Length: 119
Image 1: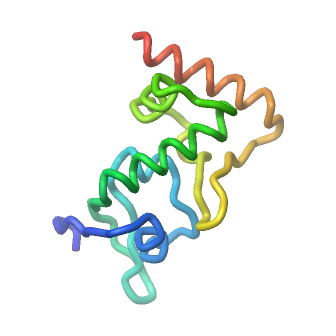
Image 2 (image 1 turned 30 degrees about the vertical axis):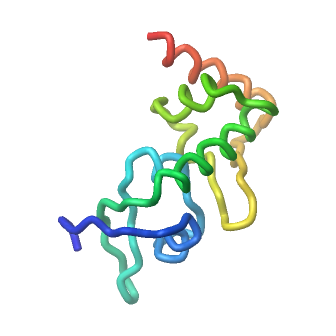
């Protein structure tokens, strides 16, 4: 499975195949995930429809900004950092898994994402 690109028709189908119980922004950004393979897992590249990916980014951006603009969404999509692992979808909710101080971390993410988009 290592060189194979798996194709999924929905985010839910991707989630169901994952070794993890959430889809993170990092997984969506990298288009690479660990897929269940019996009792173990193998990591591979994957594809989902563009509409599913756009829906994910729009909804995950709402976790960071209450009313994200297209610029916010695009900046988040192209950002790189620790926050991508913490922005997740569990099949029901899009959320941010905070360390200790949720409001502070959200403000920091906004700042980091927008700074990266300007550089």
